[in-house]
Image (tube, rainbow, N blue to C red; front, side):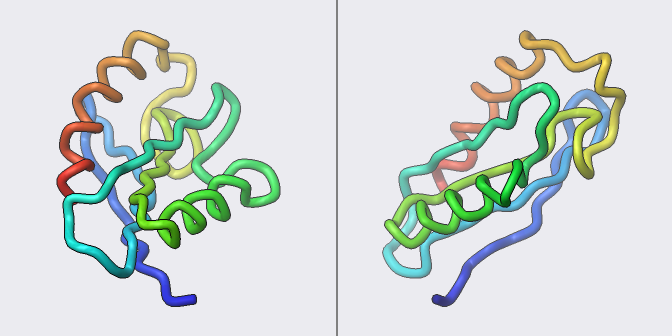
Length: 102
């Protein structure tokens, strides 16, 4: 199956977060989008590559999927102990509106 996966990084509060954007192969943008958020001790991959497999399944079904590492997790910069639920929620509202246009 052909893949349309793009490494992404973006800055939040002066720290660089890293992730992967999975886009559908066919169909004109904008696409519906799912943002996959890992748990407090997880990463954008998750055990058994669950998030990777799910994101690819979404893309194959015509739905874009964004998965990324929160601050201090996986490949992202920052200190995990500074990660708060409020900072997660602020980021989610800001980013979802931008990903939907991809």
